[in-house]
Image (cartoon, rainbow, N blue to C red; front, side, top):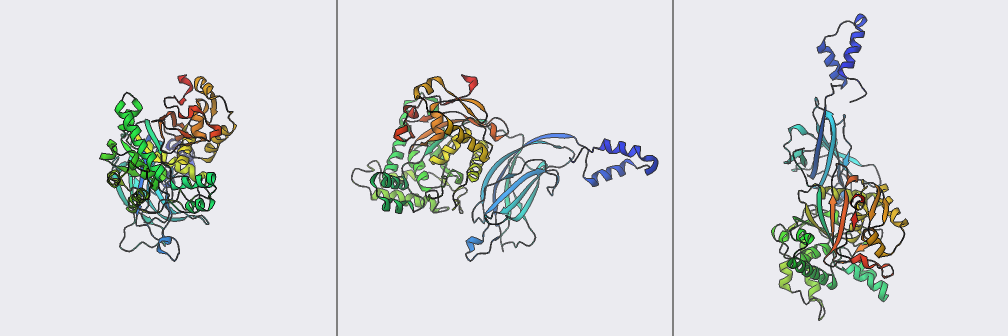
Length: 527
């Protein structure tokens, strides 16, 4: 509420001025209060999770020759307010990622809102859609206002988007928004185990080696200039080997982490070909793959630097699994004698059997420009909220080394709040940290200051923030999602699984990087 004017204060003021202003009835006073926007404040707390799922039929927003380029780069801002117009905002404003050239953008952006509001006022979710522009201010597309009290918790509802005046609606197409609102009655597990699996060696990695080790610059650059590199024969063999190693560990039994892995409740994968290939081959026969398959999530894609093309997609929708099949068959048929002996055309069809949920990849799902520090933080923030507010407590994510390293940097020690400042503070700590003997690090659990204060971090934890996971490596990370703010969420401990290793240059190699059973990260209180 504005200022400190309450109904009591207004009434007292009225009594003092009765001698010269005339007596006002209680009904008249209430009308004045309501007109000025002031209501008697009776505080009520709320905790609401909103999932902006997708929009449909968004209008053209740009002038371009190609029809595809006229589509908006759509994103949404959303918040809670005590009026339908959104003037009396009572929460922070959250924002989805923008989707390039999206007529029907899928966001699946989960955000939590907590606080207090006036119980005498209605509570509204305000969603405002925009067209992102790099060279000018973003254009408003339209708005949706939803009364929260009337919403059935957890149910997906579709609402018409009220377009901004002057924007033309597409012919024969409804312009709508799909939303889910979860109220206090819905609870999510706060302790979650996430298994991160990096893809096997790709054509890009092969090209890097040609340039570095063999001096074959021309051929290497030619390969790098293509997009969405699939696995090469080595990468396919690495994925097959991961499959053997996890099944062997499962057969031996007795390991709690292995049991969690084989009983994982959800499998997610980057839509880039090399990651999806690794997922299908490496997890062939996994119980969850057999029943529910894998869900593609575009925020798991690789971080794109200024010169790299390996983070750019090539296909959308149903063409993604088609490309996976084509690339696998081509690599198998072109393999030399002695290569890919564990693979066959029948095996390829078998690994391609699980259902692939296309999720947010039906339209353009990658960003053609390089990722800025701000965009990396926003993507991590969006992804971690997606994982946090999934009902599953054990999840497998198949993706990429740079993205996984950024997640480790953000959540080892906690303190990440979605800002560049929080991300850079971790990098500065790593830059300034002293190199010490690995055995001393393991046994002594050297103290290392991070953004949330002193935290005990082992050698593996430091290396996870400094170096990349090896090809087809698997990392188990136990997350603590207690609290309502992202900066309180953290990776409590981690472990490399199934004999996995980190990719550390030989001059910096430490034996501890591949120590599978090491308690990687422990809070001070547990020492």
